[in-house]
Image (cartoon, rainbow, N blue to C red):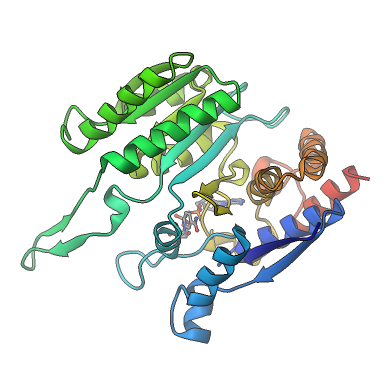
Length: 333
Ligand code: NAI
């Protein structure tokens, strides 16, 4: 069966890592028809908006998208296309697995947990305004509906993946109402999942614990901002942003993308590590039921990364993005 999938190359290193991912997926023989659409600066040039309607329409029609990172101007310019996409398509769960790779040297070994980040509200709701000229307010939105939904998703994921513990991250000692509500929803949800251990921890303590003993964690559920920050921290534990995939999941739509950004500092140099994007592609293949193709890539990628010389430069190897991609494809033969 042919799978129609929306493909968003994105900005910076996006087109490079997405091209690698498409090549690796196509080498499995799986039948995919890619519908390529542009966002961000490229879309502004062509269509006058960073997120054209045709992008939303394509994803709504195909239900599945593979996406590269999109640059968001800092402190000015258009609002984050990523945030708009997640809100517009109601992609409420951002799922980010963090898993050590055999042989890749990193701060920790044996790490294997999943971050489940609430994806539609919190400080990312983008509700902010100036108060006079010398003060600004950003409003943090936490609702019972979104909090219960993400906590339930985290417990369901734990059950499905045979994970034994859910850790909820918050700062309810200070933000007693907003984070307090998130924690209340988590505690209530935990009562329905007695087979899964539940604990909660404040985000500052969690940052230290993750650096010291990340092997203690299995599923971490957090509001948007803490989930975002802890994702990058966690990628750092296993070897960096080049190794961390992600999925934005809604009721019937899913958009898969690496955790990292557009990395403009290494754009066009053929040195970006496409592993995060390829791992996101593997998550996508599993989501659409193409398990054989997913396992084939997973095995080849793992074997490629085991060989020191076969890695990309930031992992101590000497392969470029394109050469590393070919090496994975060679391992699949
Ligand atoms: P970044 O994640 O793009 O880069 C941080 C550092 O990690 C840089 O030194 C970069 O070279 C390195 N890096 C990232 N991915 C890598 C890879 N695959 N291989 C090797 N090295 C890699 O974060 P930064 O620089 O803060 O953000 C750049 C832009 O990306 C910003 O406009 C930001 O808003 C956007 N962004 C977009 C995301 C998305 O579309 N989902 C997510 C995060 C950031």
